[in-house]
Length: 375
Ligand SMILES: Cc1cc2nc3c(=O)[nH]c(=O)nc-3n(C[C@H](O)[C@H](O)[C@H](O)COP(=O)(O)O)c2cc1C
Image (cartoon, rainbow, N blue to C red):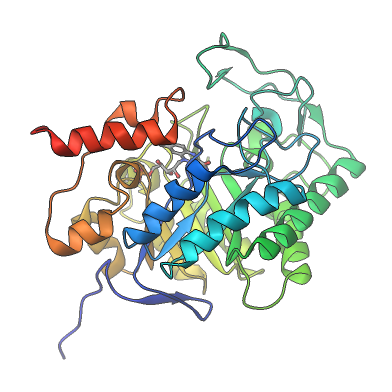
C-alpha cells in the first residue's frame, strides 16, 4: 500500500480548530510594547506579517500574567489588565484577517525576572548566569528569589486564569503555558531549582503538579474550543547545555504525567535552535518521539525546523504533528509563501534581533537585505 508522506504544507487541526498548514511561528520576545506592557501598532504590523505570509498558527512572545512578580523584561507586553487586552485585540483582529490562529504565550519569569528586585521561585536558589537583555544596563547577578508560599501559589494561578480570560476577550484562539526555557514552571520541573519537600517537590509528578493545577484552572475557566497548550524544554535561557537528568527516562516520566491532563498540544522548545543536540537521545529516540508515543495531544517540534528535510523527517517518523519556526520567521515573515513558491528566503542574521532594534527598523534591515545581492 502506498503511504502518503506528510509535509509542512498539509492542512491540520488542533482539537478541532483548523490550521491551513503545519507551520507555526515560535514565541519570540521582542521587547517592543510600551513601558506599561501595552502592545503597539508596530507589534500589530509585526504579527500580521506572519499571518499574511502564510503561517497556519502564530504563538506570541511570552506575555506576563500579573502585576506583581511575573514580568520578565522591560517593554515586555502583559495581559494583566484591560488596556493591555485592548492592545492585543488589535493584534488578534489583524491576524484573523488572514485566517491564521493566534495563541498568546503566558509567561511568569520566576527567578529569571530581568527587572524586579524581589523575585519568587519554587525554592531560594540563585539562578546561574547574569541578567540583562538590555545593553543600557550592565549585566549583574540574579537576586536570590524568595521561596513561594501558599498565597504566592494562589496569586500566580489566579494571574494565569485572569490572563487567559483576557486573552479570550481579546479574541485569541488559545494560550500557551510557558513551562520551558528556565522560567517559573520550568524552575518547578528542574530538580536543582526545586528543593521543596512538600507536594510540589520531589518526583516528576510533584514537580509538574503546579503547572498541571494551573492548566486545569485555566481549562475550567475558559469555554471548550479555546486551546490551552504547554511548552516544555530541556535547555534554558541561562543554561543552554542543561538536559533532563535521566535523559529519555525523564522525558518518558514527564510526558506520562502530562498525559493525565491531556493538554490541547505540547510544544517542545529547543532554545538554542538545534533540535538534534537539544532533543535527541543517544538511543535514537527524542523528546518529541517519546511525547508522541505517550500523549494523544498534537506535538509541535522546534529548533532549526526551517530545515525542511529535518521537519519532514520528524513529521513522517511520528515525532511531530507541527513545527514551529523562530529566527527564520523573523528573517522572512512570509517564509511559508516563499517556500511553497520555491522562492529564496532571507537568511537569518543576528542583527535582526538586536534588542535596541525596533520592529520597524528590523523590517527595514530585512528589506535592505532582500534587495541586496546578499540575500
Ligand atoms: C529573539 C528571540 C526571543 C525568544 N523569546 C521566546 C519567548 O518569549 N518564549 C519562548 O518560549 N521562547 C522564546 N524564544 C525561543 C524560540 O521560541 C525558539 O525556541 C528558538 O528560537 C529556536 O527555534 P528556531 O531554531 O526556529 O529559531 C526566543 C528566541 C529568540 C531568537
